[in-house]
Image (tube, rainbow, N blue to C red; front, side, top):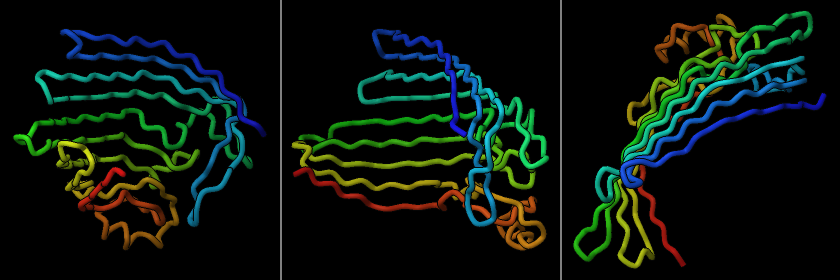
Length: 223
């Protein structure tokens, strides 16, 4: 059935210290009717059905600080309470369970610094970090098919010509080589050898992991 949602949000955006500090806060409340629920299986994702009702509410905080020219610091935090208020599917009652892919806590932080290299262009160094608390990959809230984003660190260094016609970047993603599930389902004992290899104690059998440590060089030319 079609999905409907009423969303209420109240927020504040502010600037301080001669616009060098920006602080934003937002609170929200969303009520769903006939929410369409997807469920992860061993081979993919399917539309499981409709939750009779569900709600999600929380708060988001954002700050950006530029203490000196060229330097930018940012941090964000999100709190989310998202549950199925009424959800019965094929005889199973999921009412009161947490909505899938809904972390209670989300944190990110980063830094960037730009500076001129004589008259030969500019350099930009940046890095960011992301963390998300445990999420469930199905409405049944199976602990064996749940995981968190334990922390992903990225960094890059970019050189830009004075005329900005071209730039070259050296970058690295997931520098800590963390292995976390972004999709998973429990296939019982079949997956236990792979779980042991990945350092997981869960019996999750099939899923998709965050990309491993990746690095590269990117060249951009503006026509």
